[in-house]
Image 1 (cartoon, one colour):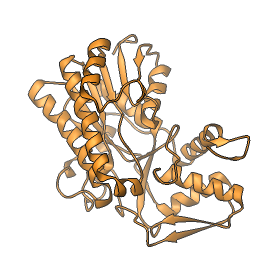
Image 2 (cartoon, rainbow, N blue to C red):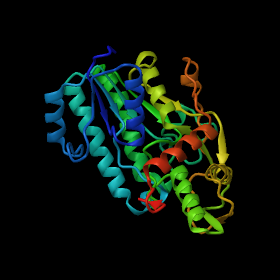
Image 3 (spheres, rainbow, N blue to C red):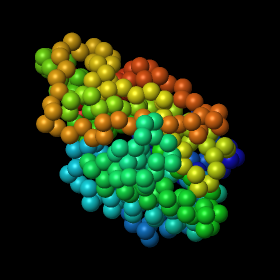
Image 4 (cartoon, rainbow, N blue to C red):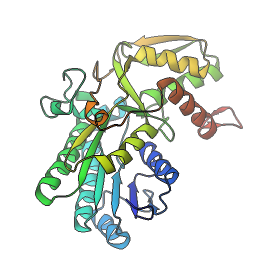
Length: 317
């Protein structure tokens, strides 16, 4: 990929997309395209095809998606399935028509069966049913991963997929009802701290285990695979370690400097009890993550304070 190659990052304002833009910019790439939802609705096929015909991107990172936490996925499975299928298929189709040189699709660890053997290898794909709470989103992501595989097989398209573990970082969604584990807990601890609340409650037993990866490490892995990955393949991207939700909450509590108690609510869903990725496939090519969990939580909390917190009132936006 040349420094002036035209690169389209779909979803460039989101957590993963903005991490990709930062990584590309830091490496000296100067011709990066991004469109907001207001500028380009990726669920509208004709608009996507017109955009690709006009801009003619050479490389595509498909980081755009309808995403949300466990509560949002349970409430709106149809939207998570249908919107993501539209986004993916429209970009795949337009990329094929415009002969995009390489495309990387951002998948999700929830594509794997709920009871997959730990750590989960790429071979576990489609060997069982995804966990119920994220099924609509999971099915859409499975379709995207398999589409890349089939398009490579049928048309020799250099499309590949990455399957990251739970991500967190800059530009994450800190909405309490729609956020993933790290931003949701950061916000709860912060608000408990400024409001003087004596305890923070987390969903479930706290025993479910999650592997966490700083989003900028995923971006680094994506660029690594542009040079070292193979079309049609999919690669697990993980940190190599997992933690219980209670352990994660304790780390975030320390990061926020909150001195109250952590309680659990067993009446709330907590999703798959374990999801540790086997990332040996990409590790064997020479890639490893750089940001530790403690470092990443500190950076994410600082970003939250600087970008989400209303400094005038001390609350949150």
